[in-house]
Amino acid sequence: RRIIWLIGPWLHELNEEVRPQLYTSLVALLFDSRLCSEQEKAVVLTLQSTLHGLVDNWSFAPAAFASVTGDAVNGLYRVCFILSNFESRLQILSLIHLILERVGSAGILPHVESIMQPLPQIWESTADQNLLRKSVLNITTLVVSSLGSQASHLFGFVLPMLSLATDPTRPDTEYLLEDGLELWLSVMQQTPSYTEPLHNLFPHVQRMLERDMEFVKQAMALTEAYIAMGGAQFLETHVQAVVQAFSLTVGEVKPKAVVFVTQAIETLLRRFPADGAAMLREGGILGKLLEPCLSTEASAANGMTLHLAVLARVMFTAPEQMQAFLSAPPISDGSADQVLGRVLQLVDLWLGNFDTLGAISSAGSWHRKLVTLALVSLMPASPGMFSRLDQVLDKCIDVLSEIETSGGDAAFTLLGSPVRAKAPGVPDAPDFYTQCQRGMVQSDPVLTTNLRGFLEQKMAEAEAAVGSENFQQAMAAVDPALLAQLQQRRGP
Image (cartoon, rainbow, N blue to C red; front, side, top):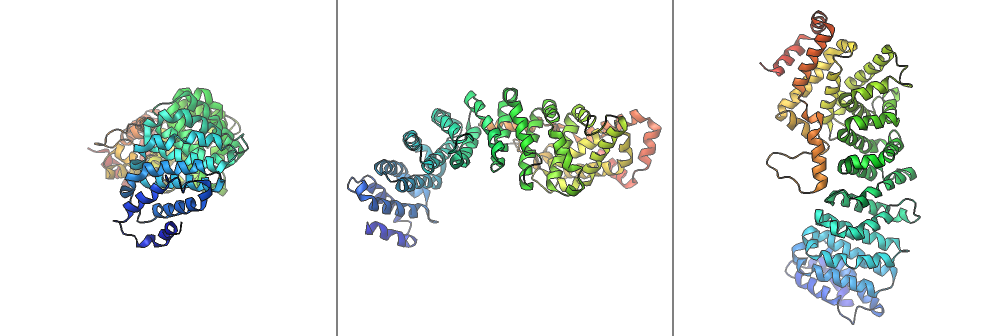
């Protein structure tokens, strides 16, 4: 025991040549029947502590440990089953997790069977020991993440465990929920298909949010994944749960969490432009998005700016739903003047917060183009837009200039896209999750709409709507420098 302990204080003095032999010698002791017994617990824990120090060391080299990884895991499981003390078993499982974390996927993949085989027994035998179950969840997450789409053969064990760990109605879930959510996200990202057991898990997200907002980031990430991967099947079954999740979070979370909520809503609108907007309108979510935007106290809040980006998407991709929203109480009495007033309020908010949109998140470029498209889409239908033509064209020129600088419309939009689409020359990722996310981005009207062409189309429609003479009068009021820049960006 003293010899094993003595290694610890001298770890920093050990050179790289010595370490592989030391790893082998220490791991071999895990199988020594003289040491691995309850009576020799002190020796076993000293061995565990020394191994922990070697692995959790800045000079640890996974390649040097590779030859003993399988034996180390098997030996530690052996010790775990021999020991009965809770703290001792927890330390052993924590060391297994640390080893797998340090060796990474390359070290995990050759030993998946030996890593996973003991876990069901440990899980079943620790119903009243949540810290041990947390370790099982953490080890499983590393294995699932390493296997990728090949992890599906583990789901027979993983999904029932996941259902228990993420069920907010269970009294012990508070100890398992964070680690269960991490595993759930990993499963969603690695599953090769959208399955019925995964489909049936989603109500846990709503129940979790009804309890508190501690894990709103994970809840919204899961909601995004379900929308992208489950598509119409998911939405048809869980529409009320999705609406309730957004109702619980929009306007109710801390400012730093607003981005997670609005990104999930944008995923819904990207996947289901018209139906998603109808859900948000009928569920009262659009009203909750608009309310802080109209509050003078929130004029500079990042959350309000992100709300404006969502409203711009509804205006651009589902204008009939926005019209219905703005025409109904309590937003307006439905009269043309009041509806136009609300539209122009939104226009002024988009114009006033245009620069902020580019600074508050990684999707700034995406949102700037989105807001510009929403503004341009209103030109033929809203007479009040002519008094703001200078500002609208100025924003168009800014975005067109960024597009030209970045090398084209698609390239510019992808710079700020929430999910990067496939770049030229890069092979498609094989996993189902990435393909679903990429498909949404590549079909998004914000990406596919050419701003230059859209502007020319809407200006022509505006001229036809108000007559050439009125249109020319409006254009005459625009700063000539802006018109010259616009002409340059229209090309010859």
